[in-house]
Image (cartoon, rainbow, N blue to C red):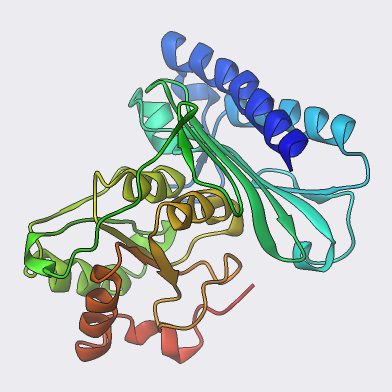
Length: 280
């Protein structure tokens, strides 16, 4: 997978230059489109995705590409049905980007038969590049990353969390999660970029990450990278992690089990059991 990694890294950096242009110049309010009430897209999302699609399809013409703005191309049916699928978020953290915050990135993963094999997360405004090939150690700015130390004490942990775009219409879906862990941890943080949240866990800068109502392009690369550092990932019910479910509990060894214990004891994600949000 070395060629795939090299292409993904080169492509993510090229796309990052497009995003840096917008970050430095600022995004005019009239250029921001609304896919939903608070779900934004900018011309830079589209330019970044167009470049990523062109580079990947040129290098790997037989592969499918599943990307946030344009959906899937080059493969049959749901992306999991294709043998090799590039899962792309051309700008993860669009709301941050539109407001001038530097917490945004390009996320590229190659999934083979539904499992991530290559992952790259590039945050150009921060100068951060995370990468991994399955079976190898993850890298941060080309240097190998350390293996995460176990942590058992939830009260000393720092957690990341996220809230989906339905938070304005279904706030209770997230308030139970926030209240439960706010009172049991050292602190909660939110960057607004799922891919970066996973990578912060991988570096040990935070100890865990919880979110529902995501998409495969939000998680496919970041979870692969975090697992390579020793983090454990599952669905919120403790079942196997599936990027197409949109749900993840990610944590250091030891802490991950504690997160699941609290989730189950307090029925934190009871809303997920009513069928209102299922696997895609």
